[in-house]
Amino acid sequence: MKIRPDHRNLSYSGRIDWTNPEEPVFVFPCTSVGMRFTGGTLRIQVRNCSAYWDNYLGCILDGRQSALKLPREGTAVLEIPVEETGKKEHEVLIFKRQDACHEVAFLGAELAEGAELLDMPKKPGRRIEVYGDSVSTGEVSEAVDYTGCEDPEHNGEYSNSWYSYAWMTARKLGAQIHDIAQGGIALLDGTGWFHAPDYIGMETAWDKIHYHPELGGISGWDFEKYTPQAVIVAIGQNDSNPKDYMAEDYCGEMAVRWRQHYGQFLKNLRSRYPLARIICITTLLYHDEAWDRAIGQVVSELGDAGVTQYTFKRNGKGTPGHLRIPEAEEMAEELAAYIESLHVFEQDSSVTGNWKDGDNNGTD
Image (tube, rainbow, N blue to C red; front, side):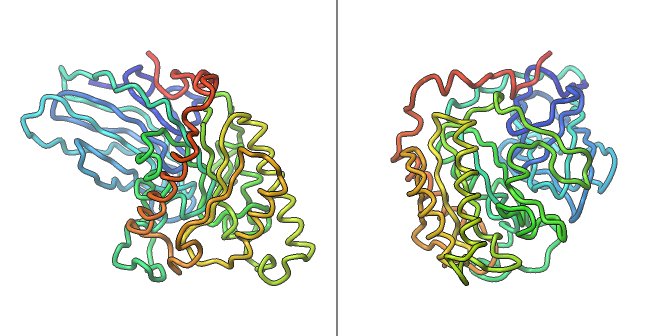
C-alpha cells in the first residue's frame, strides 16, 4: 500500500519546503513526519542531498528509537522493521537528526497490503521556535562517554536533534517546535564557523527555508505558516571566531556593531511575532561571559517587556565540548521551568488563531 507524502493522515512538523507537495524537503533539525498504521510492513522512500558528514534520519517506532543511514546523494528505500508484538496499531516518527549538512526529501511510504493509515492526534496548541547553533541542533549529543569533555572524532553519527535541549524543552512544555538552528552559525556573515571560508550568519539564514549555497537555491520562509508563543534566541557563542572581540574590547567598534545588529535581529523577530515572548540565552558550552553581558545590555536597552534574558546555573561553564544528553537535559529542565513561569501560553488567543493546521499536515 503506497502512501503519498501529501496524504491527509500524515502529520508534519517543522519549517518544510512544500514547493512540490509530492516531495516535501526537510532542512532543519527536529523537522518530522509522523503516522499511525496497521500491518507489519513499513518502508519509506527519500532523496538525500549532502554537503558534508554522513547523514542519518531519526526513527521512533512504537517508542523505540533508531538511526537510518542515508545515501550521500540520490534516492533510497529504507526498510524499517516492525516487530510483531501483538499490537494491531503502530506509530512512527521520522525526523531530521542533523542540520543543513544535508537536505532530504520525503517521497512517501509503503505499508502492507490491506493496512490502514490512521488519524494522528491533534497537535498541541503550544508552539516554540528556536534560533541557534550546533548546541540547539543536538550536535554530538549522543557521545555520552564524553560528557563534560572535548568532542570525540566523528562524522555526524553522534548528532541527534531529539536529544537537543531545544527539543527536550519542547517536550517538557508539551509544545510543537521549529528549530532554526545550524552548527557553527554566528549572528553576522563573515564570522562563526558555518560555510567556511565564506561564513554565513543567522542574519542571512533566519528567514529562509534553504540557505546553504551548496544544496541549491536560496528561498524564503512564509512566517504566516507558524506562529510561536515563545521564541528562544541562542546566538552569541560562535561569534568569537575568528576574533573574540567582545571579550578583548567590549567598547570597541566590532563589539558595538555586534550589539547593534543583535538588537536589530530581535526587532526583526518582534516584527514577525508581535505577541510572542522572546527569550535570549547562551548555553553551558564554554564561552567568555562578555557575550552574556552584551546580550543583557541589548535586552535592557531594547525596552521591550516581552524580551528577556535567561542565564543558566552553569552558563558558559558546563563543558568544553558539545552538550551530551545529560547536559541538554539540565538546560531543558531550567529553560522549560523559566518559560512556564512567564505564562507565555496564556497569552491572547489571537496568537493561537494565527496557526493553520493545514500548513503542517498533509492533504488528500
